[in-house]
Amino acid sequence: MTVARFWRDISSRYNLYGTKCAACDRIYFPVRQICPECRRSSIGKMERYKLSGKGKVYSFSVVHDAPPQMSVIRPYAVAIVEMEEGVKVTGQLVDVDLEDIDIGMSVEAVLRKIGDEGPDGVINYGFKFTPRLD
Image (cartoon, rainbow, N blue to C red):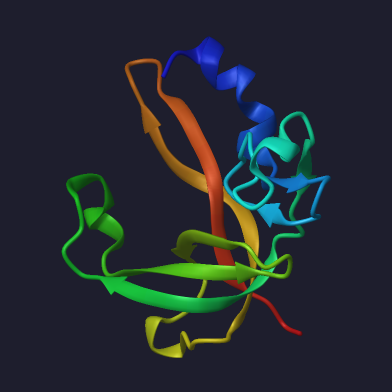
Protein backbone atom coordinates (compact mmCIF):
# COMPACT_ATOMS: atom_id res chain seq x y z
CA MET A 1 0.00 0.00 0.00
CA THR A 2 1.33 3.42 -0.87
CA VAL A 3 1.82 6.06 1.80
CA ALA A 4 -0.72 8.32 0.05
CA ARG A 5 -3.41 5.62 0.13
CA PHE A 6 -2.59 4.83 3.73
CA TRP A 7 -3.24 8.46 4.73
CA ARG A 8 -6.49 8.61 2.72
CA ASP A 9 -7.76 5.56 4.62
CA ILE A 10 -6.89 6.86 8.10
CA SER A 11 -10.47 7.62 9.12
CA SER A 12 -11.63 4.07 8.46
CA ARG A 13 -8.45 2.55 9.91
CA TYR A 14 -8.56 4.39 13.22
CA ASN A 15 -12.31 4.28 13.81
CA LEU A 16 -14.50 1.20 13.88
CA TYR A 17 -17.15 2.10 11.31
CA GLY A 18 -20.02 0.15 9.89
CA THR A 19 -23.13 1.35 8.09
CA LYS A 20 -26.71 1.80 9.17
CA CYS A 21 -29.65 1.53 6.81
CA ALA A 22 -31.90 4.57 7.20
CA ALA A 23 -34.80 2.56 5.78
CA CYS A 24 -34.80 -0.31 8.31
CA ASP A 25 -32.24 0.78 10.98
CA ARG A 26 -30.14 -2.38 10.62
CA ILE A 27 -26.41 -1.97 11.25
CA TYR A 28 -23.77 -3.76 9.18
CA PHE A 29 -20.05 -4.40 9.36
CA PRO A 30 -18.05 -4.11 7.22
CA VAL A 31 -19.40 -1.06 5.40
CA ARG A 32 -22.03 -1.82 2.76
CA GLN A 33 -23.43 0.25 -0.05
CA ILE A 34 -26.80 -1.52 -0.14
CA CYS A 35 -28.85 -3.11 2.67
CA PRO A 36 -29.36 -6.85 2.01
CA GLU A 37 -32.86 -6.59 3.52
CA CYS A 38 -34.13 -3.40 1.88
CA ARG A 39 -32.19 -3.81 -1.36
CA ARG A 40 -33.16 -1.08 -3.86
CA SER A 41 -35.01 1.01 -1.31
CA SER A 42 -31.73 1.43 0.62
CA ILE A 43 -29.80 2.99 -2.26
CA GLY A 44 -28.54 6.34 -1.07
CA LYS A 45 -29.80 5.67 2.45
CA MET A 46 -26.82 3.83 3.94
CA GLU A 47 -25.24 6.03 6.62
CA ARG A 48 -21.81 5.75 8.18
CA TYR A 49 -22.14 4.42 11.74
CA LYS A 50 -19.42 4.41 14.40
CA LEU A 51 -19.49 1.22 16.47
CA SER A 52 -19.03 1.44 20.24
CA GLY A 53 -16.10 -0.98 20.23
CA LYS A 54 -17.66 -3.02 23.05
CA GLY A 55 -18.81 -6.60 22.66
CA LYS A 56 -18.60 -10.22 23.77
CA VAL A 57 -16.59 -13.16 22.46
CA TYR A 58 -18.94 -15.13 20.20
CA SER A 59 -16.35 -17.72 19.17
CA PHE A 60 -12.56 -18.01 19.20
CA SER A 61 -9.67 -20.12 18.03
CA VAL A 62 -6.07 -20.41 19.20
CA VAL A 63 -3.57 -20.31 16.35
CA HIS A 64 -0.52 -22.52 16.89
CA ASP A 65 0.86 -22.75 13.35
CA ALA A 66 1.20 -19.12 12.33
CA PRO A 67 2.43 -17.47 9.13
CA PRO A 68 6.04 -16.23 9.29
CA GLN A 69 5.17 -12.62 10.18
CA MET A 70 3.14 -13.83 13.18
CA SER A 71 5.46 -16.60 14.36
CA VAL A 72 7.02 -14.51 17.14
CA ILE A 73 3.67 -14.15 18.93
CA ARG A 74 2.33 -17.68 18.53
CA PRO A 75 0.25 -19.14 19.96
CA TYR A 76 -2.33 -16.37 19.77
CA ALA A 77 -6.11 -16.15 19.80
CA VAL A 78 -8.43 -14.84 17.11
CA ALA A 79 -12.08 -14.24 17.97
CA ILE A 80 -15.38 -13.42 16.42
CA VAL A 81 -16.75 -10.65 18.61
CA GLU A 82 -20.45 -9.82 18.69
CA MET A 83 -20.55 -6.07 19.14
CA GLU A 84 -23.20 -4.31 21.25
CA GLU A 85 -24.80 -3.22 17.97
CA GLY A 86 -25.29 -6.86 16.94
CA VAL A 87 -22.68 -7.07 14.17
CA LYS A 88 -19.82 -9.55 14.33
CA VAL A 89 -16.19 -8.44 13.94
CA THR A 90 -13.14 -10.71 13.69
CA GLY A 91 -9.94 -9.74 15.49
CA GLN A 92 -7.03 -10.90 17.58
CA LEU A 93 -7.47 -11.13 21.36
CA VAL A 94 -4.62 -9.47 23.26
CA ASP A 95 -3.67 -8.79 26.88
CA VAL A 96 -5.23 -12.06 28.05
CA ASP A 97 -3.86 -15.51 28.87
CA LEU A 98 -5.15 -18.03 26.34
CA GLU A 99 -6.56 -20.27 29.05
CA ASP A 100 -8.63 -17.37 30.42
CA ILE A 101 -10.59 -16.79 27.20
CA ASP A 102 -14.25 -17.80 27.36
CA ILE A 103 -17.28 -17.54 25.11
CA GLY A 104 -19.30 -14.56 26.33
CA MET A 105 -16.26 -12.76 27.75
CA SER A 106 -16.64 -8.96 27.59
CA VAL A 107 -14.08 -7.28 25.34
CA GLU A 108 -13.42 -3.91 23.75
CA ALA A 109 -11.63 -2.82 20.62
CA VAL A 110 -8.21 -1.25 21.02
CA LEU A 111 -5.95 0.27 18.39
CA ARG A 112 -2.66 -1.62 18.09
CA LYS A 113 0.20 -2.07 15.68
CA ILE A 114 -0.54 -4.82 13.19
CA GLY A 115 2.74 -4.67 11.28
CA ASP A 116 4.93 -2.63 9.03
CA GLU A 117 5.68 -2.88 5.36
CA GLY A 118 8.00 -1.83 2.64
CA PRO A 119 11.40 -0.18 2.71
CA ASP A 120 9.86 3.00 4.14
CA GLY A 121 8.70 1.07 7.20
CA VAL A 122 5.10 2.29 7.08
CA ILE A 123 3.50 1.11 10.33
CA ASN A 124 -0.02 -0.27 9.98
CA TYR A 125 -2.41 -0.05 12.89
CA GLY A 126 -5.72 -1.78 13.33
CA PHE A 127 -8.17 -3.08 15.86
CA LYS A 128 -7.60 -5.92 18.25
CA PHE A 129 -9.70 -6.86 21.27
CA THR A 130 -8.80 -6.81 24.93
CA PRO A 131 -10.81 -7.96 27.98
CA ARG A 132 -12.92 -5.34 29.73
CA LEU A 133 -14.46 -5.22 33.17
CA ASP A 134 -18.24 -4.87 33.12
